[in-house]
Image (cartoon, rainbow over all chains, first blue to last red; front, side, top):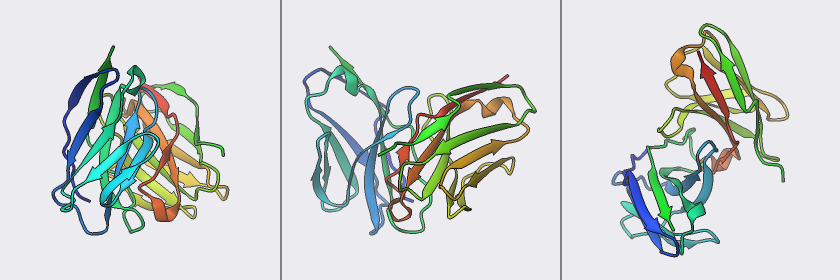
Length: 112
Length: 113
């Protein structure tokens, strides 16, 4: 499984757009990129998944450049309730990979 | 659609005791994974169950064991509890061919004294 690197923490203000970048230099051809969000004392929640270019859902957008060695999670107009830890994971969705490997994630603190 | 549920929510045990944690998977999901999350860390994979058999294991000793039942629910058992076993234990369910899209329960907070 490809290792990921992301900032330990980020600060933002309500209403701003937040971009969290994740590096995954050793991503394999079959790997997808998935982001999870976790609030204190809760389980992680799936946010978005992508393979290449751009993916958008009701919560976030995921930008993946052509070389796929990094990805950027974009949260539009954050609110206080978006304060959480965000994890970037890389793995083969349908293959023999059995586990999700979480790093320490990025703690996003949104201030009023 | 019923989400992943876990019981109990909190548990206090003493060293050397045994504990059983329970998980009900999301409707239609046939794969269950268990994770241990220490304070300030990301979740660490313990093991995964599919078709009632263990299908992959992380770096955890044999005193961590599990079961999956025909209805896809699951149990995590930990014997001979140690202080370092204090953590949030998370259960996640998924479809076998979408294992990186896992749906997590709220977790069980285990405290070992």
